[in-house]
Image (cartoon, rainbow, N blue to C red; front, side):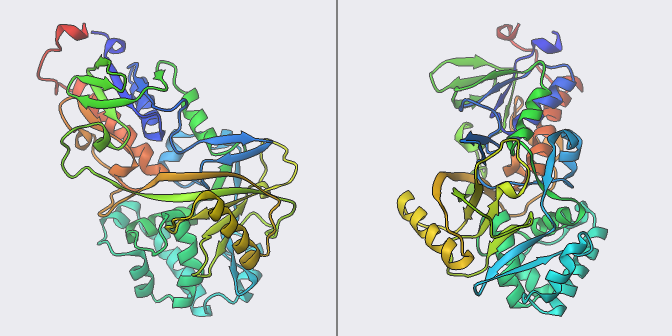
Length: 426
């Protein structure tokens, strides 16, 4: 049988699924991606509304991600980079803290910022130096503890933890208590130190578009839901059966694979609200953090502080919320507007759009950096991909998709198939 004749299905057109398809294509296979929505990308999408670019939740690409460097042409994404720092809104003031070793313009603002002590700022430089010398493997081999515990043990003051680390990393980890694994904190901190946080000029969906453009022999089945994945068969939501040699489940497997043990994943959610405003209170390309513990707002970003492919009339402001709440949309918008004025002195002209991301990041413990291709195999013909298999990051989504595809290829090409395929496949 020719490689192109094998029926290899991928459930989910997110980043993991697209990478899996890419790897399969490179080995001569013609995969078929089944996607329940009308477009690829999963959570990595951008809407264009009234000349504004609105990503599905505030997202950045860390250019130091090894998998991103492997699978993306970063130059062709026309990345717009943030400065290595943040604006902290605290006590009615703006305070800038950043890495002056990477951008000299941040030196004076960081020195005079009343955020933490001189000792705290020296410890930040010390941590940067330590992690620069620490390999990714070594980070993920360390014992886990919470990020909050690690920061305390490293000697950071409660002040800088509450005013900088908590709001900054809560926006990344999508949880307000810094209970995320210290492995993840160190990995992300290392990535920030070795590269930039950036957004493609045309929005985060350019990552998806670039990956899709690389696929020449992949078929997409959009608006197609999967009810169940079984050995050699996929049952669609409309009741139709698809005969499959191999299936890569690049979504949460517990939703489509019956009788899974220890595969149920809890998810972190977040809210991102977009507003149109006439002017910016943050003049540089920096993310804004609201440090007040009573605020529902975690971070803000003026997307128009960076170059975009569109020419918007005014400024576009995103507000990200990671704390749990029971507010309906009208009440949430009202509360956010009040807090923007109270904490940031921002007056908004109008609300534009809300993105409620229910499955924004997997909530994991004992997180890993990578997995062997053989470890992605669930059954002889079913393989698992997705960032929930490793850690909540774009890097992990790419690695897991790659390893699942390699698992299929190994099974086909290295003598691991022990039975002839039935005549249904021929």
